[in-house]
Structures are given as structure tokens and as C-alpha cells.
Image 1 (cartoon, rainbow, N blue to C red):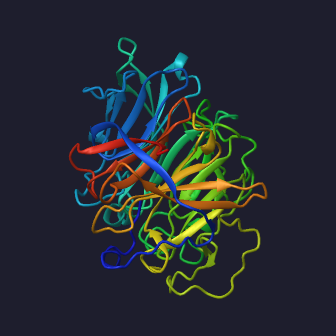
Image 2: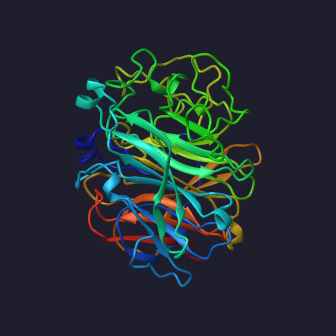
Length: 435
């Protein structure tokens, strides 16, 4: 959810050729309205064994969709007081992530990720120049009302000071097999992994001493080393000097929306790139996904971000499984300007089984041109990418903020009609076959 060159994006022409992945015929879909009247929905999660779905609104509330598919008027949790003041025209801060403890049904614990007020801790440089503190906090459900959280139960799990307002990441989710909490983090913001709060020589994405530009993995059932979490013993960099032990994978720019496949457990993320390309990654333990050595599969120079060097050291770097042109610097054949990670479909439509439904925020900043794509895996490990044709929606699609998946494996698109977290005008759609 990041636009690095807003002014340039306003005037670019658009194309339809996929770069970096085989292009297939478009898939006909319908976007069926599910609920409306929400504020910038960035996640919708259905806990195991629960007939409710929980939606986070970017400006700071968690809402409930009941078993009848109706949006409850009263919020489950309201933490607007904990979140920094947001810009109405466009902001990447806010309530960013939601996850339920694997034992939520018995212990009532759940977790939110949000952009909190900066705890500069007497560091004047941070006080004057840094933006906020990205926080993951634990809450429990009220003992008297299952549709209310207990705000007094709050326990901070992680708190990461953030240089700029953007590239926050902070999707959170529990691993289906290990019960560990995974946290995506962007590189700290601004552009090109450079500037205040960035490693000047290699960027935060490649710097293993910082948790920025990473996938983190922690154990919320333990408290160790003065933290309200433990370090899993099998994290890949445990015991290495100068390396943050929370790191599970690195070399990421802004992993915006990740998900575990409910079929085989693989972790897939959409990683927002700079000006030229966008990418989808399958995250592996200890993997280096290239930023800022690479932008998608292409060598990258932070000092000349639109001029990609002919060669670079790609040894040990993991390339994305899908990529496409970003309209900012590669208008020919471009498909969008900010990738939105999705979900592997495991619902009732047999032809979609195992396909990855994802999208892009928009092809343009100036007007709504949200995109929905379908990625299809091949037996040899490569992926084929398709655009979609929405047969029941006239005109341009709304901005695509996120995707969600229910207990039946069906996938939803979370959308907005504004560029900023204002009002309660937004809609969640169910993605279904058109035929």
C-alpha cells in the first residue's frame, strides 16, 4: 500500500501485458457485495470454530460481522486513541493487522498491529524526525460479552520505532503448524531503502541487525529477555552475533498482506516494490528476497532507481514467483502501482483450487482502478498469472486494500472508494466465478 511517485502516477498510460510470469487468458469473476459501511478495511479474519468474522478499520476499530453476514453496529475493539493522527488524503499508518491465538476459543486472546504514538525514549533525533512506533499488542475478550474485547487486558508484544509514515507492513498471522506469530515489517519508509532510519550502505532489507524489511517469528506464549515474547529456538539466525534473532526471512521492501495456504501451509506475501516492478513471494525460512539488491528479478540501484544495472550479485537471493510492471516507471504493459497480497483459494469452486487470488491497489492514484489477479501454480514450480474481468461491475473497480478468506476457503476483496482512511463508505466483496 505505497505510492512512491504520486505525481508521476497521475499521468501515465496503462497497458495489459504481464512481465515476469507467463500470461494466461483473463478469468471472469464477480465481486458480490458482502458488507458495506466500513472504514478502509485492511483485514478480515474468521477464528477457528467461530461463525463470526472480524474486520479491522484502518482508523482504529475492529468490527464484527455476525453469522448472518450483518455488520454489528458496536465495535469489538476501539483503539483510535492509541493510533497516531492520520492524514485524510492518504496514509499508510493505522490499525494494520489482526490475528487470533490458535487457542482463542479457550483463552480469548487475540492480537492487533497498529501505528502507535512514537516512544522516542529521550532520543531527540527520533523525537524530531521519526514518525511513529509500530506495535503488536495482545488483548483478551470480555468475560461478560463475547462481542466485546477487554481494553484493560492490553499487553504489548512488540514495539518498533518507525522512521517514516510508510512501508509499515505489519500483517500478522499464526503459523498453522508451529503456533508461532509471524509479523511482516517494511523497510522503514520513504523510498529506495535510503534516508533517515535506514542503513546507508546496504539498506535495512539486507541488514540483519535490524528488524525492518523482514518477516519476524516470535512465541507469544513465552516472555524472555525482558520481552513479552520468546524466540523460537529454530529461528534461522538464533545465536548469530549482530543479528536480530526474531528474523525468519529478510530482503523485503514492504510486504503488504501475507497469508498461509490452508492447504499446504506455505506462506505467500505481496511485496510492494519501488517504481518499476511488483512481486509475489513464497517465504522460506532464512530466505533473502533481494531488496535492495534487486527490485523483483531486476538489479536495483538506490541512487538511480529507474535505471536497473545489467548485473549484480544475486547469489543466495530468492526471486519472486510472479512479477509485473509498475505503471510509475514501466507504463508499457503495466498492471498497477502497489501490489496487494492475497490468498490461495480453497473454496467450493473446483476449478480455482490451489490458485492464488491477489491484486493491486490501483493502476492510477488519480482515480479508482483496482486490480484483481489469479496466479496458477504449475507442476514445475513456476506460476502463470491472469488478469480478471469483473462481469457484474460497470466502470472502474475500487481501490483494492486487502484480501481475506473465510472458514470455507472462500476469498474476499477488501476495498475503498477513497485514497485515505476517511468516512465509512467502503465495501467488502466476495470473489466468485462469473460462470
